[in-house]
Structure formats: structure tokens, C-alpha cells
Image (tube, rainbow, N blue to C red):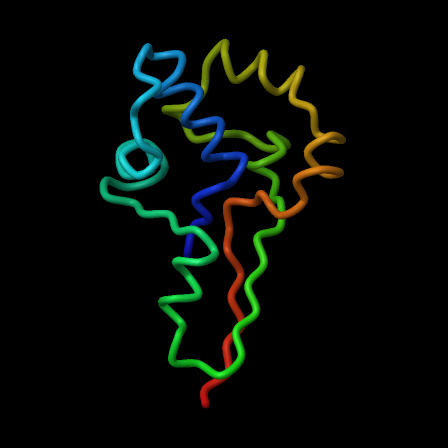
Amino acid sequence: MIYHKWSMVGAMLWLRYALFAGRPWRSLRSIYAAHLESPGTKAYSVSEARKMFYSFGEVKISTPLGHGDLLESDAGQRHRGAALTLAKKIWPRRVIRRFLPAAGLGMLIEARKL
């Protein structure tokens, strides 16, 4: 699994653990490492993923929205609470689907060897 750095989940995590925590300078890298899954979890931009697959002839990368990006499913236990309950009610799913269709957390990569 390769996580997409510039995802809606990343934006939500940054809001919660950086902006609302009074530390807006906190990097997405540190937030993903401490709060997404297991300690040290990493997320990559599409250009960083392309560099990882530089030795392949044909590389197709997509970052479709998933249920987590759209707040359509339950979150992990440590992310639950009043803020998530409110966010689920006001989350602009239609706007996100329309204007940010490639802001998904999961990065899908199809690559062919040379």
C-alpha cells in the first residue's frame, strides 16, 4: 500500500493534529508518521511515486477517492469523537467528488517492466 500525501484524509489529519492543535507549521510527513496507521507510516506525492518506479517502462498512477476521504465509514478508534461526528454531518462530499476526484488516500500504481 502506498499512501497519497495530498489526500482528503491528509487534509483532515492536518486540520486536527496541526491547525486545531495550535501547531499549523507541523508537516504532513510528521502527522502521517504519528497519526495515520502505525508509527512511521509514510505518504508520497505522485511525483515521488513516479521516481520510485523510474525503472519501469510504463507507469500509470491514480489516487481515487475512497470511503475514508469522503467520511462515509467508521474511523479508527483513536480518531473518533465529537469533531468527527460533526465533520461527517457537514463534510462537502459532492464538492469533493466534483472538484477533487484525485484526492484519495490510496495510490494505485500500474507499472510494466521494460
